[in-house]
Amino acid sequence: MAPIFTEIQSPEKDAANLRAELDSLYRDLCRLFLSHPEPTVVSDDRTLLEGVLAARRGEQAVRTRLEGMQLALNDISEATPAISKAHSTIRSLEEKRTRLFAMLGAVCSEIYDSGTFPGELEPALEPLLVHRSEISALEERLEQAGTPVAAMVANGRLKAARKRQEQAFVDTGRLVEGCGEAELLPGPKAASIVSDLAESSRQLLALRQEISEKNETISRARLSLGSGARNTRLKNLELELKQKEDQTRLAEEQYGKFLYRNRERWQDAPENADLVRCVSAIAAARHNLYIEQLRSRIDALEQARRICSERIGHFTQRMDYLDGEISKLNRQKEDLQAKVESEKFNIESIRTQQQALRARFDEEGDGLDE
Image 1 (spheres, helix red, strand yellow):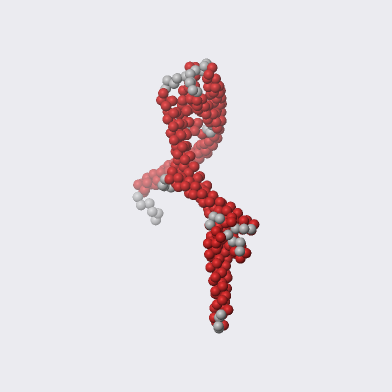
Image 2: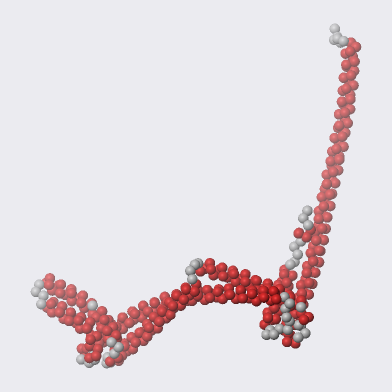
């Protein structure tokens, strides 16, 4: 049968919480001690102190690597959508600028017709003037068409050329803006368009600069991440950090216990008042844990007693049942014994008859009646 205490489910939760609290206080004592610029106590066990310092260095090294990797991944995560958004905004601005170029080209056409177009900007009118020349030539060809077929062909080419007027305005407006002196154009309409183009140009410049900077950020992040599966490396670093943190906690707990055991060497120093308060908290926690362990042991023993009582009751019931079975078997045995005695009597009777018959046979020989 299994030992009685293997069946006992002791209330360990409170004791585990108190032990965790005590271990935390040991760590606090270690940290407070090491935070003092000139602690009074001098450790006799350099191995414990060096173990704490080494564990902290190891933890910080892994933490720095993990934070660097997380920062790099975060930079990539933030930069990538920002670049996509900037490209989308650039496309919208380019479409807006195309419309502004067309409007500026149309305004330039009006100003040119009014005879007030600045001479400095006239080279930029080439697309517009070329288009006008093309239109004039096609109109003249249409007028001079001698046959309906020729007229139809000329009219088709004229319509196609007129559809290209918008592009001529766009090209003219782009050249005028590119001259750098578009502000020379007279009239508020031209000034408004030029102002809008200048603002959109500044926005484009800022967006392209942002894209360049984000790309550089991504390049640096990828360089720092190196090659390999990033998610796997990140999880491995997180696991390694947890292991290092556990090692640091264990080392701090061990050193905190050492400091507590040697508290009489430094607890009277006034500059160690915060350490003394921590020691008092540890003493209270140790007492609470001790009381809880006693209570748990008492509860476990009471539970063991109840289990023993339950077993006794079970065994007693089993014994009563077996006593009943034994009584039944004894009665059956007695019945069988009586049957055995009866059969023995029958055997003796048969044997007596056999002997009598044999004796008669010996005396009479052929005993057949005639």
